[in-house]
Image (spheres, helix red, strand yellow):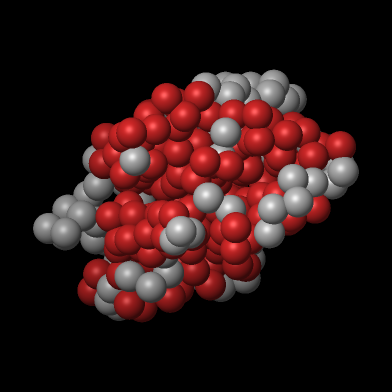
Length: 275
């Protein structure tokens, strides 16, 4: 009998995740690690080697056993357990449409609940969460490089979204000491220091888009495809797009609802946190 598990798992990665969903390489790597661990569990505990695993082995009891094994034998915490469960849930959700004859089996696995972990306040992302969010932004496209410069600056500067929208290239001081000039409510000006890594990203972005030229220093720093200022709704949409991919990888540290204010508040919390 053909190994139906291998066939569907391969399609899940190559056709669905990469092709239809277009998820990031980080997500695919995380999912791949989950199923590698599952194969190890099946071999060591269930005594079924990889060549003999079939879809019928992916039962609720087997997955619960796998999750317990992660925590008992590999000493994984609840957050890591939930991350592995998210990958399995994604596969079972995919299988609902590929194998409708066993719909109850897939929904039974999907009913396994995540475990509670220490959660941050609604407006507070951890440093690891911010890193995970930034990792979802592709550096291989022009739009991705704009989004990286924009979202990284939103966090590093702690700017309000309207302050970010109103930025021009002249707002950035690209020589040491690095800083950005923000105009808040009532046109109140404040200077915010930036880290060197942020300046590197901004210099590359500005050079690529001709924003480093003197004649362009009053144009919007971040523009849409018509060369106009981005809107509050537009920036929020972009942020939610990447946060959705980050949440797939680790739902425990990325909230379901996220806005530019989350990054502003997170920066303030990280700045005030004792070393």
